Image (cartoon, rainbow, N blue to C red; front, side, top):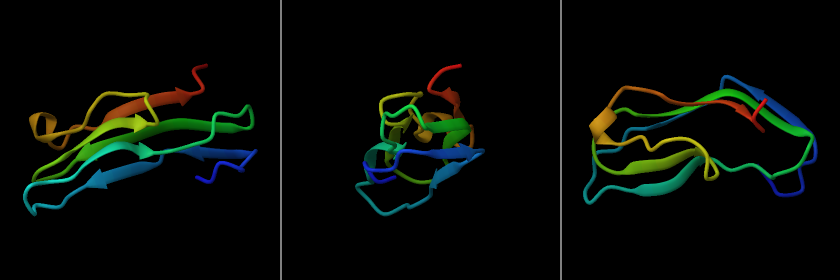
Length: 83
């Protein structure tokens, strides 16, 4: 999401990593959002589907890592900002 977005609501978004090419890609987050009052996320998740690499956080620096150790298990952020 662009830094200049001032109002947005996302319910139930998901980002899935599924590439198997080595050495794998690790990304900081599945979603990047501006930290502003009008931007709200509800029940978003990242999930590692297969292969190498990882997604360190679901949103910005929030949420647990999705990687081969928890393949197929969504890593959720229930509300951002926290309710």
